[in-house]
Image (cartoon, rainbow, N blue to C red):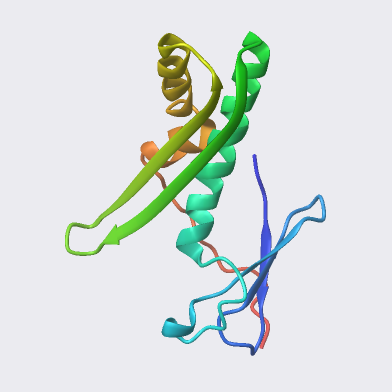
Length: 135
C-alpha cells in the first residue's frame, strides 16, 4: 500500500504533497488555469507515476537478465476526454542499448506489466470520507 498526504493553504492551487518517508513534491496548476506552474499538474503527476514505474520495472528486468540496456527514455501524454468520459494515455518508450529484437519485444511486454500500468488499466474505486471537520 502506498500513502501520501497533502496540504493546500491560501496560495492558489499550490499543493504540498509528502510521503511517510519524508519525500516532498509540489503540485500546481499552469498559469493558464490560475496557478503559478510551481510544480507538476495533477495529470502530469499521473504521467510521472507511470513513467517512473515503467522505467524502474524495465531497469530491474534488464538487470536481472543481464541484458545490455543502457538507458530508457519515456514520453507520456495524459489526455482527458470529458465528451467520451475517458482518459487516454500515450506512452512512447526509447530503449537504448545492444538489444536483440526479441529482447526489445520482451521489454515492451514487461512495460505493459508494470504495477502502475496495471493499476491504471483496471477499474478503480475511490472511497472518500471526511475526517476531523475543523472550522
